[in-house]
Length: 98
Image (cartoon, rainbow, N blue to C red):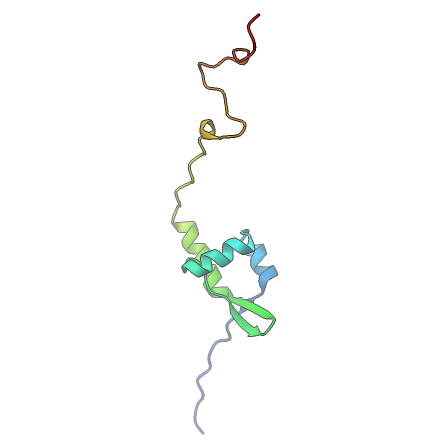
């Protein structure tokens, strides 16, 4: 009798379980998948997509170990609407002089 190789069953997670683990929007996850920065989903059926749990956990561990640079704060003085007053501008300077 031939011995069969026992392959471990991969644990998969659906979208709701992924959202509990990774607090990112669906669109962000999709964009990261397209760029190759997040584990790819695969289809079990025409209406069911899943992610490999081990790949998602490895991605989370890699993100935790590698710090990312934070995005810079926007320069609010360059806004076209609701510009912030600079240090030399006074609130009443634009009013009419009598």
